[in-house]
Image 1 (spheres, rainbow, N blue to C red):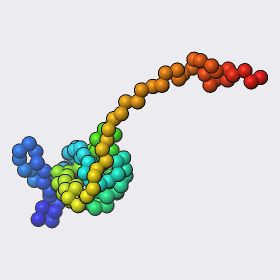
Image 2 (image 1 turned 45 degrees about the horizontal axis):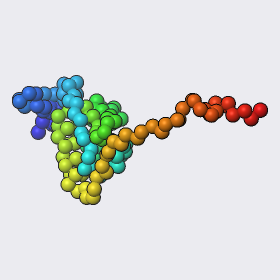
Image 3 (image 1 turned 180 degrees about the vertical axis):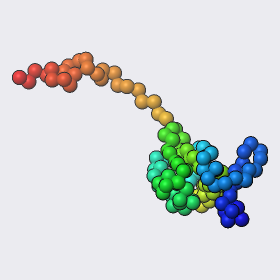
Length: 136
């Protein structure tokens, strides 16, 4: 009903706001989506971005001239930051809910391991790898 009138909605604070599509595209909302439990390979952000751009309002994404953007967040937890409208965020939430419900198997576990440096490695010692071996 709203689309026929070139209108859409967003949530501002605790209020539902009806406004024009053009106005809402000037006030995009940023959100971080954590990717654990989705079945996507860790670090394979391009597959996730491609899936979202082709299945959720394709013309809203910057790749096709729209205002919405996505960027991977490189951290210990795989995540992407998405800047888009409230209604598109709702569709993204449904997408990730469906992906998580149909994913089976164990997610990879990310574990940080501190590897101690080996003693004696460096520039000192015999030769040091800089040509001091006396071959000439």
